[in-house]
Amino acid sequence: MLGSSSNNNDNALGGLLTHFQCPVLNSTNYPVWAIRFKTILETNGIWEIIEPGTGTDVKKNKAAMAYIFQALSEDLVLQVASCKTAKEVWDALKTRYVGEDRVQKARLQTLKSEFDLQMNEEETINAFTAKINEIVTKAANLGSTFDQPSLVQKLLNSVPDRFIQIVASIEQHCDLDEMALDDAIGRLKAFEERTKFKKNKESDNQNKLLLTRHNNNINQGRRFGKRGQDSSRGRGRGKYKGEGHNSEDLEGNDNKPRRNVDKSQIDCYKCGSTIVSPSKS
View 1 (cartoon, helix red, strand yellow):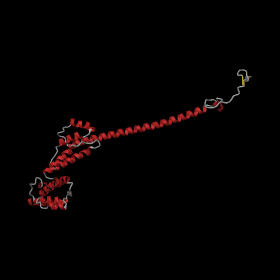
View 2 (tube, one colour):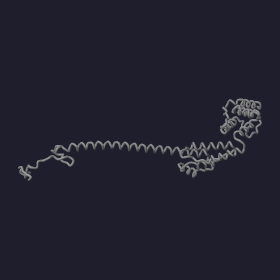
View 3 (cartoon, helix red, strand yellow):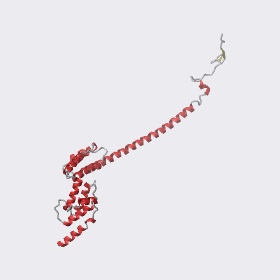
View 4 (spheres, one colour):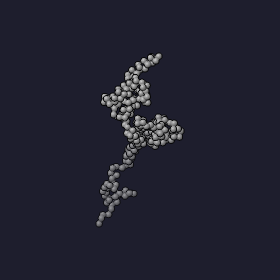
């Protein structure tokens, strides 16, 4: 039975490298590379060779080293080729990319200052929490961790006033000491989406109202225009009809000259006889 178990273990280790695509380490991706690589080694049961580093299984050590070498450039392989164990290779890479203790402390201090950030009015919850998660990940690779209550409190204190209602509700009805960061993020995102939907709906209703008013004004203007046109035509026709006046009768106004009238012979208004006016001396 022991021999059979040993053979199965050997076969499993012999086929490890075909199961995963190892991420390649470069000058900028060490934090993410370390997380991915740790997951690969844990999945295959060989992370114990590196942490806590107490494993003595020769085959597991070789398998871990094979994985690491596969993810390094030729220059890096030459630099760590003298290491005897996978743990030594891992620690050498960590020292190179993370730095000594003094460098780590300086970087942690920088991260703490970056952690004192506030969400802008234009930002979304997804964009802001991505910044928080990035800082948390970097801090974890430097050996420092943030507990969940601190992250939740940081998030609630950093959002703008438009989230004040949901923040007050969370603080009133939830136990912040037991709440996970993902739970707080989910509640804020739900509130953000609901608020966005409501604003879009109100905006659509306002646009429809403005369009309706605009169309009503146009139609009303058209009706008034037709009525005024008809009235002006009626007044123009009725001005002269049946009144017995001709155009000459209308010329006796202040703006036009009057006709010359011979006042020496004027008919009497009562009897109709001609009245001869005395001649001027």
